[in-house]
Amino acid sequence: MVEIKIDEELVKKVAINARLILTDEELKKFTPQLAEVILESFNKLDSINANEEPSFQPIEQKNKLREDIVKESLTQEEALQNVKEDLRENGYIKGPKVM
Amino acid sequence: MVYEETLNYFVKEAKKDFSLVEKNLESIIGEVKENIKNGLNHIEFFDEEFVLAQLKELKTSEKKGKLYGVPITVKDTACVKGLESKSGSQILKGYVPLFDATVIAKAKEEGAIILAKTTQDEFGFGTFSTNTQKIPLNPFDNARSCGGSSGGCAGFTASTKNYHVSIGESTGGSIAAPSAYCGVVSVTPTYGLVSRNGLIDYANSLDKFGVLGRNVDDAFSLLEVIAGNDEADSTNLGIEYVAEEVPLKKVAIAKDILEKCDEEVKKIFLAKIEQLKKYVKVEEVTLPLNLEYALSAYYIIATSEASTNLAKLCGLRYGVQGDVEGKHFDEYFSEIRNANFSEEAKRRIILGTFARMSGYRDAYYLKALKVRTKLINEFKNAFKEYDAILFPTMPTIAPRFDEIKNMTPMQNYAMDLCTVPANLAGFPHLSINAGFSEGLPVGLMVVANHLQENKLYSLGKVLE
Image (cartoon, rainbow over all chains, first blue to last red; front, side):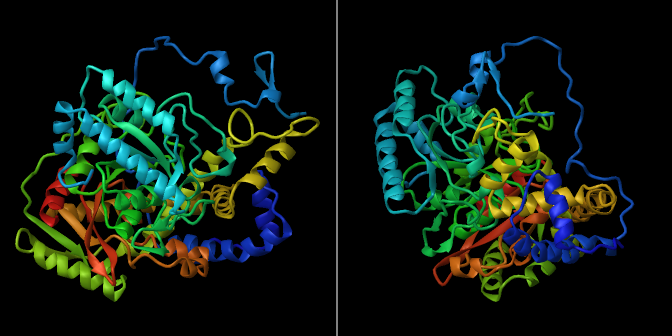
């Protein structure tokens, strides 16, 4: 059994991990909704034993190997086509600060 | 043009007389415009020039393929070269793919004309196509939902009088649910039969493209074309598919799942089963583990995978982009995501992030994957004796929008009771209309073992 308390603090923490900053209003609305799903649905799995191998895929998959051959890919110009004009610089994409 | 024969007949005639393609296309373009004008919201994106350019190309082409001149609508989640593709989400607004999803490339190769993108729940997050800005209306009653998340596909397929088929996509029931609510035929194939390359993903181990059509033959004609090998998708099984009838011994009704459905749905379903008994032996099974645990395991796995997939959407490279000047990446990504994901997307991202967090991962995510194995085995045991298992596609008829508004997320997820088990296990399933309750369609679902699509085809032909 997973002992857990789903409160606004936890929801806020998880949201930040997922790069979401919820408004107070969202936090108030989501917390009981998420608590209901986690406690009533997710935690239901506590009542079943499962020692089977996990199914990461629903059907058996074989590794598909292919020759490592260089093929034509997108040109730099094409790769930048979906980038906003003012975020393009000398063929690169301008991003936010990382440091 | 009026839809009287199968698609195969249309294609055969169109190959002899191109004016049939032109007439059918002109008429269906008229319907698309009418649909948009009347606010039925089945169409997410339509560009007449884009469509007519394909017609022109087809006219001069030597090759006359299996879908020669057939207009196809496509769920927004499929990437179409040169057409805005945003999987129903604001965060991908303006994204124009530089390539065709494999299903689109295969359909075009066989002479299909890509007509329009159809509306859906954002990223497929929903059962009623209400988690989006353009909510499709049920053609049988505009106050009701088309179902979701491939709502636009089903709504348009039910509305058109012209030759047409539609490519939908399912993660937990997103093809079957709307096809049931709109009274059309759909096939959700075995996981891996159809390439996912170019599918804007929701949950990688669950997502699959599938087909919707007015009749069984039409749906399977499209499935034959889009199935098959694709080295761009590492989970593609590399198997080609040809539809043909196979002998059937016996099938079973999942009695315990049926018991959970509304009385009116049960009644229509059982009346259809009575007819089926003239052709095939019908017995009963129970699937107690699936009934009890499939929804829980599904929502843990689906939200976990969704939360990782959606991490790449952060306002860089494509889709919505903001002003990065002077901003730290954490701040920039969070701002873009906050402003452009819907409430439901945020809820699912939080649920999935939670289920994968250190300390909870083994109890939730890993446990759900082990339970998934158990649930697959429960079906497989039944398939040792039965060709297919049948139950209603949805536990209710299409709900009204005011009813949906009052549902909690938990009540909403519970509506996936019938569609989730086959999707979680990657089993192919067919949904076909069983009849009407107060003028609204009731869907019947047929589930078969992995790669037994031809059992669905054969049963579909009998049921039709």
